[in-house]
Amino acid sequence: MSDLRELLRSGLFRRLFATRLIGQFGDGVFQVALAAFVVFSPEKEATAAEVAKAFALLLIPFTVIGPFAGVFLDRWRRRQVLLYANLLRAVLVLVVAAQVLAGHSGPLFYVSALAVLSANRFILAGLSAALPQAVDNDRLVVANAVSPTAGTLAATLGGTVGVVVRALVGAGDSANALILVVAAVLYMAGGVVARTMPRDSLGPDENPDASTWSELKVVARGLREGLEHLRRRKPAAAALAAITANRFCYGLTTIMVLLLFRNTFNAPTDTNAGLRGFGTAVAVTGVGYFIAAFATPVIVRRLAFSTWITVCLIGSAVALAASAVWWRVVPLLIGALVLGFLAQGQKICTDTTVQRNVEDSYRGRVFSLYDMLFNGAFVAAAAVAAATLPPSGKSTALLYATVAVYLLAGIAYAWFSSASRSAHQDRSSVTAVS
Image (cartoon, rainbow, N blue to C red; front, side, top):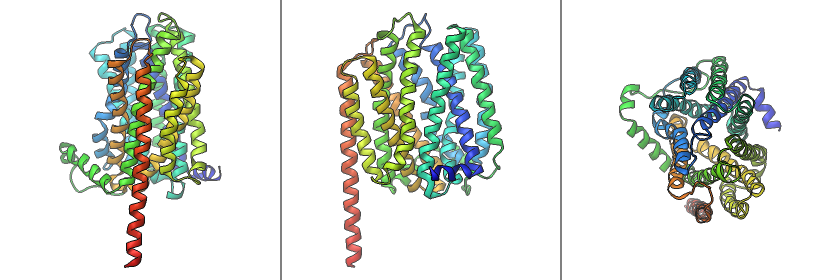
């Protein structure tokens, strides 16, 4: 708690933190309105394929825009990115609201929604890349525990508010449009807060010599440079591989739970009940994130980051296998709590490992690669779910296949970490003898 108090004494950190909280609260509101319109409309049938399409809409921009975000975040003032991207997405959300109010779900609606989510990509990558500029290295673990976790909780709270508003004003398109207007106001507020930070306060420390346009034309080179940098930073690369496996499994379980609440635990025609049930599962997961924010800094004082990442992966396998055996609401909610805790604990360790092992001049590109892997894994999970899950959401075979992936990822990461420590000790011994 003393480290957290020290963090909050920093005016720059407080403003960066507030920008994240307001923006991600708006994200939760926006995502509920989008899900309500695309998946939880009474006139639409919710199949695994439809749910996968909705998640792809949410996450493909994070995967595709990632490389471009990295190029710009290593060149543009990150404070300016936070300011103008927030204002841009506020305007775009109003365009989406107009489409929803008119009942249009054609190509223009999807293009507008994708534009909003593409702006989000710049903001979230910018927040991660800027964090080491706002805090010193000794408090980076606490900052990574508090900032992304609090942002996730803010998104969860925003989603809860969206669900409540929809329940109060009705389930029609006008209700969804109203929720979207609320999201637009929140995004504007996030931009106003970002403007209070000094223009040059968030880096980057130096600009590359090549022009932005020439770099944009060779984005592949930027990706290759980021990957090459990761090859020289093996702890960061291994942590990214482990979090990618976790995210794939997490995506599969999320789609299972959504379908269970939409079509099995509630009548398929009662979409409000399905949305409330899934919202409850998301909220319970958020509680797990919250606990992890306070527990992880304490745990990693006693355990190595690599050990805790291994525990999180193997623990997730055990929790999933135990919670879904009976396909009932209460065990699944308990499992959601545990999985949320372990997933966020692993992410905190991964964020810190990457930040500590990556040079600032590469940090924007590496975090963009990180986000590509993180969200691309969820999109891949959506594709697998679309091909294998029935509308009920029940698939014992897929459930235990997911458990197996968690276990294999944990074992592989533990082996790599052990081998790396042994190699480091061997090199140290040789150096000492010489």
